[in-house]
Image (cartoon, rainbow, N blue to C red; front, side):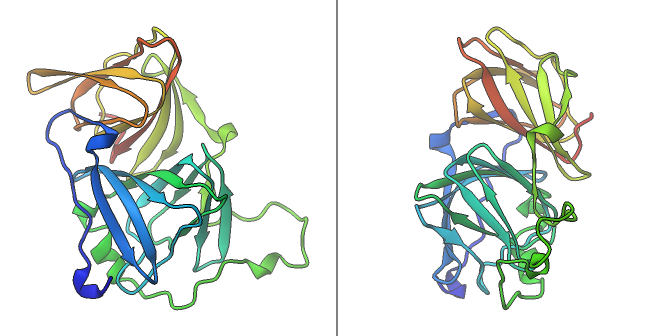
Length: 280
C-alpha cells in the first residue's frame, strides 16, 4: 500500500452509553508490504479513549514503514486474547513473549512491533489514551524521527547471565502478583495500570454479584473477557440496559452513572479502560 492510499483509522465515537458487539465493531485494515497488514476491530475511538482488537494470522507480523510508523503519543495496554504475542521495541532491542491472558504496558514514544508466534492466529485487545482524536497516532508518529535499523536483541546482557534483575525497560509485562486489588465498586477489581492518561483494571463478578452504582471522571470502555454480564447506565435522564457476552464491549461516557450485574451461572470477567481520570 503506497503513501497515497494511507488512510487514518476510523473513529467510532458515541455521546451516550452504547453497546458494541464484536460483530458491530468497525473493521479496518492498515499497513503495507514493509510493515505487514493488520486487521483492526475498533470498538470505540472517542475524544478521550481508543479501544480495539487487532488480529494477525498465524506467523503474521507488524513492523513499521515510512507510511505506517508504530510509535505513538499514548499510554497503551495490550491484553492477549488468543495466540502468543512476541512484542519488541525495535529501538532498544527489548523482546517479550506474552501468552494468552498476558498483558503488556508501555508509555508514549515507545516503538513496538508484534509477531504471532506459535502458529495460531493472534488476537490482542488494545486500550490507548490519549486517543487518535487528540493527535496521538498517525500525525504524531509521522513527526517522530524515523527508525531506520530495527534490532531485536539486547547484547548488553551477553556474558552476564544469570545476574541481578534487569532495570525496567520500555515494555513491561503486567504480572498477576503486581495487581492492586480493590472492592471500591462492591465487586473485586484489580488495578493493572493507572497513569495521568489511562487507568486499566479488571473486574470479576461471581454468579449473582452486582457492583455499586458509580461514576468515573473519564470515558470508559468495558470489554468482556469471559462469561456474561449486564450493565445499567444513566445519562442525561435516560436509562440504558445492556447484556454483554464474551468479546462484546460497551462505552460509558464520562460522568454517566453505571453498575454491573452478573446473572449467569459462571463467573464473569471484564477488562476496563478509563481515560483520563478514574475518580469523578
